[in-house]
Length: 266
Image 1 (spheres, helix red, strand yellow):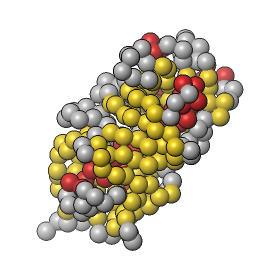
Image 2 (tube, one colour):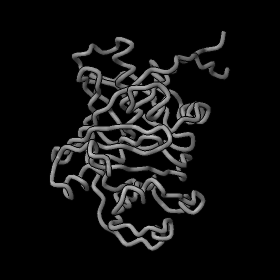
Image 3 (cartoon, one colour):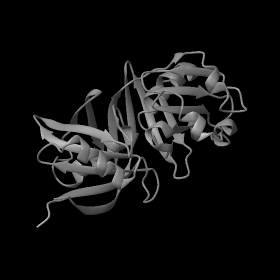
Image 4 (cartoon, rainbow, N blue to C red):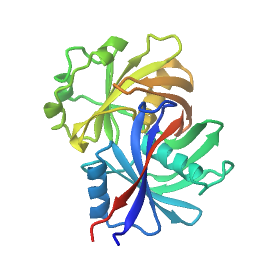
């Protein structure tokens, strides 16, 4: 009989099925070989597949795109915490503790919401002529951190109408490129999009980790620590952000979409 692994598919940063950002979550008793994890992520063909193994008081967590492993991922962490509570592996009163390439991360439940405690990843201003060729609209700020570039525009329409050349963008050395602007919606503060063709994801639907860069930037510009954010992909997703020193609280919801059994090759 072929060995099977259970995989859950969760839509994160949404309260509606087929919205937000889908992630696969795979919990195993022992770590899987890295090549197998990458192949599973390629087979799932989602922005991220999360792999969890019980460790000490929490879970060892790794994230893979269809093309590579990444050091930080928000929506797949939110999805992982959702699955742990959904399956009864944690009580609603317990925080989810994850050991990751970005250190210890925590998630807690607040009613129907999940709150992630992530490191802030502010972008430092840089001069990159290659980025200016990506768009007709001129950004008012260009920044870079360990993972991504950040392009800030004056108007929301510059973000919504942004039409990237993915081939050209994929040659830029980074995980991804965040584009952002103030929201014209009175109920929101900021709008953004995220592109990562170098990681096999042309446009990511909702990127929690990108908001660890957006929160410190916009908190300073708008002079407030709490922000309401919308990532304007085709699926779209809402987040609430709170900057607390060098940490960012990311608040969102999640919806279970599918449970499946993966047949492992013999």
